[in-house]
Image (cartoon, rainbow, N blue to C red; front, side, top):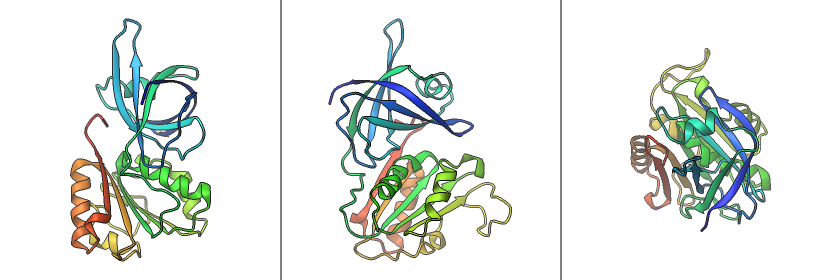
Amino acid sequence: MHWLPAKAEDFREETATTRTIVFDASGWSGHLAGQHVDVRLTAEDGYQAERSYSIASPPDGQRVELTVQRVRDGEVSPYLVGEMRAGDEVELRGPVGGWFVWRPEESGPVLLIAGGSGIVPLMAMVRQRARVGSPTAFALLYSVRSPDEVFYAEELSRLSGQGDGLNVSLLYTRSAPEGTSRPVGRIGPDDVMGVNLPPRSDVRAYVCGPTAFVEAVAGLLVAQGYDQSAIRTERFGPTGG
């Protein structure tokens, strides 16, 4: 892998602290849904900072979409979220990772479980499924603290409403919209059983989020009877690296 220049083309505000950046990266070799990329910024004085971010977009030529959440006192995310403008350039290196990926040719239903910004690589899988018209059953459990912290809210609502085998459940841990039947709280056995994907041998699970969340959910899935070898996990620390 080598570094490629990438120019910011477009932006979408996801939440008050999160934005999606669409980059054009000439020479990009393509990627798989679930992979991530290294981002390098270079200051005028030559100082460089690098961070890794999951790719939010399905494979689409040399366009690469990154959804970045601003980290307090961070070196990279405050610039990407609050200061970057169309035409600004960074360097990208990747794609990175070959285990936490979904390929349309793979058979068997898929269970996706995200905590907070862990939705990003899973959203790439959801988008890839829609892009190729895959009939594979997808169930997404998305745990967030409150409604205003949901990434891709409108798109998820639209895709899940098409009735083509994508089931999306939003789980709120601190505050929920009025009329929500599920009590606020962390993900539990009832949430997993409610997706209607029993722990069969052909079910593949992808779990992404903060380390504590991923460990708790992976343990929950094993306790519910899911095959440990079919549970793929991706975790991140405070910087998202």
